[in-house]
Length: 257
Image 1: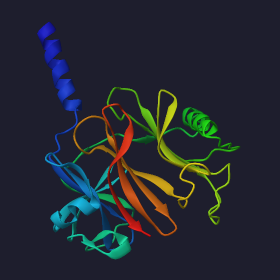
Image 2 (image 1 turned 60 degrees about the vertical axis):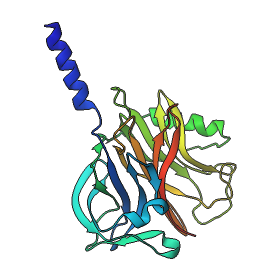
Image 3 (image 1 turned 135 degrees about the horizontal axis):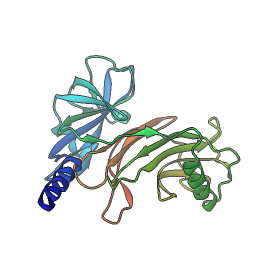
């Protein structure tokens, strides 16, 4: 009986572990266009690399189309080429009906991602505490995304949250304005990107959207793919964790001025 239990536990651990990933290329395809922007790539020899480091190596490829938590089929993409301020851009044979992440190569394990209930207080409380610590006072907190997902497969779901409050037609940042995307673990909010009147104050306001949460490199906690946009451009950042658990950008593609 003991041996049976050990074999069962080993099999369960094997099934729950992230699938091995040897090589993949990532791109971002905005809806209703025939183009896509190169984000970067991962392979076992080089690790993570950004768009400019891998652009000439990509070639024409078949990409799997991903939205948050969903595999939406396949599409062929041409060789991404430099296109001025638009970064490295490839062509698609048809338009996609929603903004998507394209992946060629080993396919990642997607994380099961659900929206938190509308009456949730965990995320609002953690985000308010973080904002107060940064000197930002908000009367009514609006969460654009409040996602429940087990990033490290320990059986305890984290929250991945996008929130913001700002005047969209003003470049001057006010003390009560902010834009943020981050992760909540054990009730504590850790920002992935944060803007306010005192943080990144010289940059234009950015809007964030979590596009994909998956085990992209096949090891450790899942990566979070974040799209950001501002009035003259945007980009996509792949966020991963270092050995100490701190979040950092592991690959990115940018476009605009």
